[in-house]
Length: 343
Image 1 (tube, helix red, strand yellow):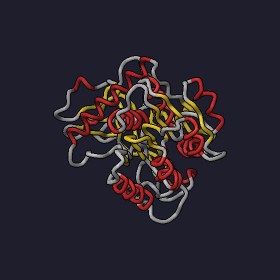
Image 2 (cartoon, one colour):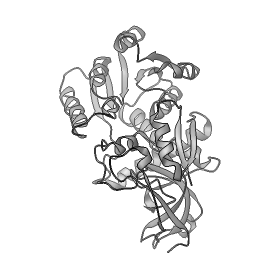
Image 3 (cartoon, one colour):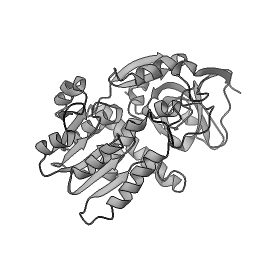
Image 4 (spheres, one colour):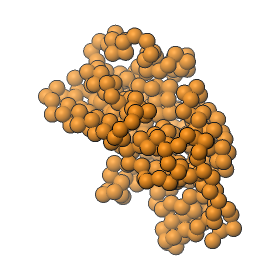
């Protein structure tokens, strides 16, 4: 056992952020093939907001420790792991368990963070960066000169997506609330206010022949509109159902509806394609491929961050024990950038 105390934030059930619990216990030793990471930064993402409401489609049963990803230093290594990893800064995508001072992961799931990136800076692009990169380059396979529509362009994934797209020479139309419009214009993105007027009509006016790809995290009615905005041969990438965050009823149903639609649309003879993106696809049955993709794509994202191709603002940094405040802030819709928890 390590001499360090283990501090974890526990989500006990469907509760208000203030009812998160703090648990203190001993840090476990790593098993064979495992490492213990001393967390330096972990993020508040949309997934935790859904989990708190019991709305994330494959969350574990309560109680559990939330936290989708983390960045930290390797504290100890288990049998069969290169001891030289100790002290290195790594990032890991975990889905749950990240809101803790120490996290045990399989060594093969850790991706080294290049020198020159601070922990909180790297943390802003782990889940959001992998998501943006894979949707843009692995699914939509965008090419220079194309035009894409990014919903929620001022959000965590959206902001990275638009910057990666611009770096690839792609024209971007981005829906966002007006407070993000100036920042988007500075990134050479054409902003559209999704709160006023007819979004599809505004997009059609900007791109009369349709767009080559749409990235939609909204779900519901938005997915149907997004499909109809595609140019022939275009790609719809749906990656969530944010519009149903506060709904009651089945948490699987909004996702299943989108999946059913994408299957149906893909049978139509117009050359358009529809995908529901899941960052965990292939993890169970194609683990080696999944890990290889993750390593490759996160390394690309870290390189883009170091080069300055992308910046991901930090909205606030709060200590792990203030997770309730951090979650409340992230849910408020008043901040730009990632809310980060530090030890």
